[in-house]
Length: 103
Image (cartoon, rainbow, N blue to C red; front, side, top):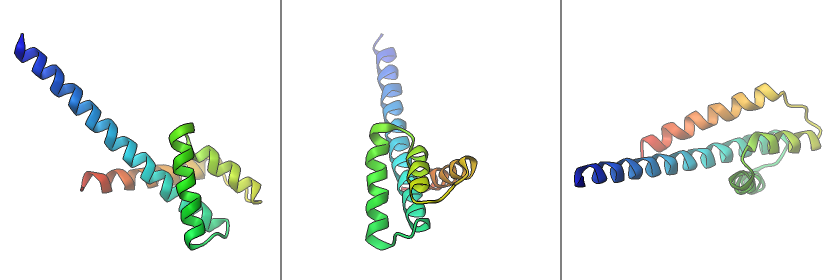
């Protein structure tokens, strides 16, 4: 019985570890999306980084950073395509996962 319990705990530990990595990757991908979008909207430097960090904080609470970026870009007079934004975020998310996998 002890061996089963140890395997169960090891499985749970591994699951928690992978969830933490995915959380970090999503935060990193959202930040990359935020900087990219901010620069498209004419923000530069620290302003773009602040927008991206705000996007990460909002994404942690609300979920999907693409929806927030879409709304912000439309408010700024841009008409981003839904598919284009989603593909851009997916690309950043893949890049973030690859970066985290090498750490």
